[in-house]
Each structure stands twice: as structure tokens, then as C-alpha cells.
Amino acid sequence: MLNKILMGFFVVTCTLNAAAEEEKNWGVDFSVNSQHQEYELVDAEMQNLNFSPYFQTDNWTFSVAVPWMSIKGDYFINGSVPRVVNFCTRLQEISPSIIQRLINRGRITTEQIERCNQLSGTLDEMEESQSGVGDISLAADYVKAWGVDEAWWTSLGLEYKADNGDVENGIGSGSRDTRVSLGVGYQGEKWSNHLDVSFTRVSATDTSYEIEDYSSMSTGIAYLFWAKLTWGLDYQLEQAYLKNAEDIKYFSTYLDWSITDNIGLRLVASDYQDVAEYPQSEYAVGFHFSF
View (cartoon, rainbow, N blue to C red):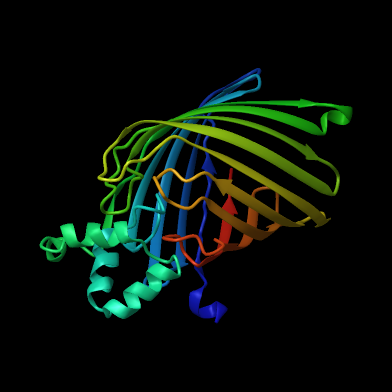
């Protein structure tokens, strides 16, 4: 079963130091990844290339993230606004009794069905797969180590995300956001943990759905088995950003193998706790390289 649903989550990160001064550093991160998700009605594939220049000074990091995405299937960026061409086409192929059963189980919503009815005359014109530049974001992050041996850390983050991606085709969230986040964590010899909270202000939307401001929280623990292998467990809770929608909550467990200082391997399994419109599960394997 795992071989059937496990797809590559391939990550290559290349850091190019364009200039370096004391307490200052320029660089560029480049990443490539591929993921697979499974829903009640559809599957999804996504390939993502991310270009992210950054500048560091003291405890601050300033960065720009420019993602290019290729999607086939109902891959979610904003879980409550799925790619309509795949979702609505599949709905046309099943009986009303099955649709009602899915509604009763919370797997689809009446709002989604109404949206499909509005687009019924244009589905044939929409492509099953889509690619293009996703939502571009600007970020400023501050991290301060403290305590005995500076094992504890505190972080402050500010991020602005544009809405240039095409939400109907699944390569954008459909909202223009500003996010403020706070975090605290501990990094010991074997155990580490973190707790992060954030608030997102939605200043504009480019979708028929009404997206509201929302808060989120994430926490996790990790254990270093030996010098190269780490196991971790994360939990995230995100307030619903659509009216009458369900809060988003999911667990992820992972294994990280640091083959060398620059090369790593990650295995990830995620469970979305039967949140409507989100995938039932997600499996990934990742490779990381940096220099």
C-alpha cells in the first residue's frame, strides 16, 4: 500500500554566498520538490521549484521566496478552495446518493457543489494540469539564543504574501496576507522541542470565497537517536479562514538522516484528521543537499 501512494518528495537546496562580511551574509536558496496526496475522490501530484535570495545581519534574516509550481490533480494550497477542474469533473461522474454520503461524512461541502454548478459550462475549457509562478512572499525573521549554553531560542517573524498565483488552477491561495509569528524552542544534545503561534491578516482576496483573518499554533518534539538520525513529531492547529469551515489540524511524523553536513534524507507521513477538503493522508520522502 505504501509503495502505491508514496511519491518522491525531492528537495535540493543550493546556497550561493554572493558576499560575506562580519555578521553579514548574502545568499540564495534553491529547492526542488515533488509530492503526492490522496483525497476521497482524487489524487494529486505537485512539483515545486523555489528560488529564495536572502540577506543576514546579526540575528535577522530577510528573504524573498519565488515558487514555480506544476500541479496535476486536486493538490491543496488553500484546502477549502480546491482545484475545481478535477474536483467538479469527478463529481459529475458519481451518483447523487454518493455525493450526499460524502457531505454527511464531511468530506465535501454544499458550497463546493454550488461552485461546481456555477462552472459547469466552462469545465471543458480548463486544463487538468497547470503550471506557473505561485504566490511570492517577503519575510523578515529574528532568532535569539539564550539560557544555559544558549540551548533555548526565541523567534519573531513577519511575512507578506502576494496573491499573484492562479487560485482557480491551484497555484495560489487566493488571498493577500500579512503574518506575524512568535516562537520558542529548546535544542539539547538529544531532545529538542518548539512552540509557534501566528496571526494572519487577510487584506485582499481574489476568489469567490470569503477568506477571513485567522490564527494558528504548531508544536513538536524531536529526538536524536545517534549522531545522524533524528525522529520527530509535529502537530498543527489552524483556525478556519472560511465561514462555517472546519478548523485545520494534522499530525506529521518524520525521520531525518544527516548523511553528511550537506546531505540529508527525510521520510514523512502526515494525517489530516479527516478535515473536510483536505487530503486524507500524505506520504513523502525527501533528499536535501546544500553548499
